[in-house]
Figure: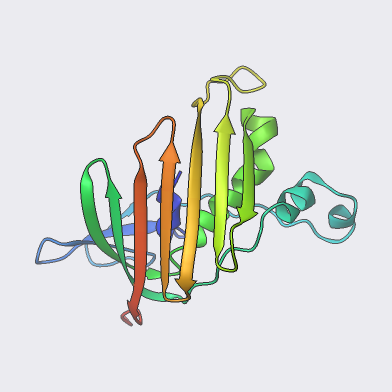
Length: 186
């Protein structure tokens, strides 16, 4: 669930390994890069009459609080989970993938997977998101992962963020990002 918050966009994420052996992730390809986890296309926004009629897309969008804005650029990201801490660099908006995931999930969670998603502001630059799947089957009988995921996004400034995930299924996970400059122009 949190993988998308590392800067996935419509182009996908490119994994790059430097001469020094360090791994970096970027929205743009680099020499010898491999594209990993292309993000799903953003959900269609409700417009005109559909937005006014309370369409599912309009209702889903209305239930998502605004996410804190962060400055696009070069980011140092530390991800800490059950396998230790990894340090990576990426270029772009590091939260765009997370925003897209939440929008997509809000529109599809109940009808498609039988799950719920709530997103609530927790301060001027904070959002809490909870995914809850009470059953291991979707409404049409397909298997889904049963469990609960709680994600807390806090951004003290447009140059920093922290995402913390707690789950009944997965190990705890923390991702912290600090903007370190502009992206290299190639």
